[in-house]
Length: 536
Image (tube, rainbow, N blue to C red; front, top):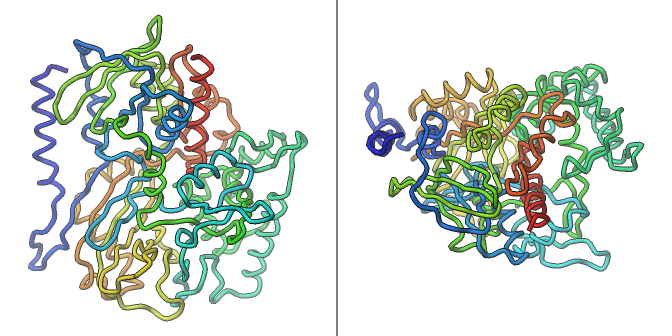
């Protein structure tokens, strides 16, 4: 790309973005609720896809370059720093680190822009538990050696509710208005899950474990990765519309993938891999914060001051005889810069890694086998809302039959809750069509379209939502997470793509696990960092 062309494009993006996305105008005689579409920086990111760049004129020397400041990249940087590697830099396109665990704030509270909780961890994840202790999420251990979690970080009551059959019920597992046969199907399903929780394969490993690659490789279990969750439910004669809805809700929540598309292995893993024990919490309790997993991002980067460069679009990564050369664009200054390093960790999705490396074979493998689902996340600032009958307002609020996953109340975690204003974070995985089509549709739509979609859904449970909403901001995640479709988790492609390129280039991202959860990102970073240290 010529310099004058780049200046024209980036200047155009800077001017056009607020004009395209700001929304406070009059429409049909009524005032549209104000707000805007914020990040992620798709327009700048597409410069990498659509244009080529000349090499920078100069290169600064570093020992390690990490590209991507999501959970994996920050985890790798933290681990390397703890091991004495101080001369490192983390590059990230966005203006704040965090990836899909990013967060925002306004006058009333902080709030998540993506991942918003972590379940109580499994007790064998010693590095993860140590991190949570460092972050003061774990305050100590009891006489039995079980972790004690800070009560302020365990989800406050009331925790969750489901609007079903005209009533808010407690909990998300449907029960209000169900008959005996429908309730019996849930009992049967959770009995099967309990079996899988305790099951070990012929290799002695847990059938379902975290990280994914510590799970058993028993062929009878791997076979579950060759069918969809729907097919497995069919085989177990679990046919109630309520259980089908619940499983679909869960797989779209964690994987952005409908139950008739997701692998049965991944679907069962969602339920059977969680086995954490604590002195003051159960395995199914969750840890959460006003800003969601943004709290954990802050903890990961605590000792990385001066080592994270935001607004930095990596444009190429090239292996050299003694390491690697990295080119990146400083978006604010419009300057192309270069780094020479002994090692590079690509903590980015594999479709991005392929472009950075100029690796067409890797790119084809990703195109053929990986699908990344887009999401829309909305943050609403609201006043006091009218409530339907039943369970009172909770942290997690889900509507039966909705295409959305409902909303969480960020202000619910405040020690002193404010009643006059609340921040609600609404989640919608765009699973109504193929990811490619949904992605195109998402970025073509404006703020008014998305605001209306959110309000129309929530009006079913809060009839005065339009009058009581003061602002709606929208985040579009074009490639929020990889979908664990049949064959991905136990297949060979993701494992082949995770192998280092020579001694200098290593990979870390949840798409290499097939399951996009915090623990996977955390351990992907550590795994890549250890590979790097083996070559040092």
